Image 1: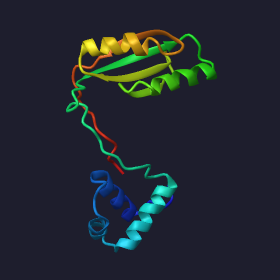
Image 2 (image 1 turned 30 degrees about the vertical axis):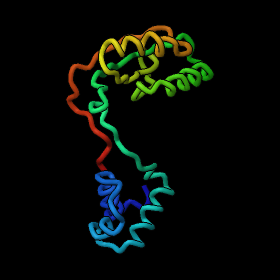
Image 3 (image 1 turned 90 degrees about the vertical axis):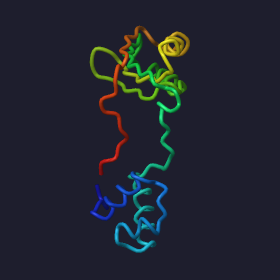
Length: 153
């Protein structure tokens, strides 16, 4: 990774911790003036290392306390079918994560819902209606042991 010296790592660590940190405070923390820090940030954005800045919402505070993992098996895995499935998954806001899997099934979905009733509704009305769905298997999470955002540099 080009451009990743110790100062850039410190800048990234600070931004991960608080993306709203004023540039003057960030510059003070990393031992540079404002202009070089701003230039470094702009370069890391242009490199694609920093992809954006956003508010991170708490699913628990939003009442989305129920987590279920869903294995999805498709009846067609040609490229067009995969693209249609992917587009459908992206349209379901309760699907927090979706991964194509190499193994005994095709996709693994992480679904957040309010409770089991809400999850059953999402399954019946949205996930089961996705293009090319052949079968699903659901696993309800009982406790989050590790759940974090990417913070290591």
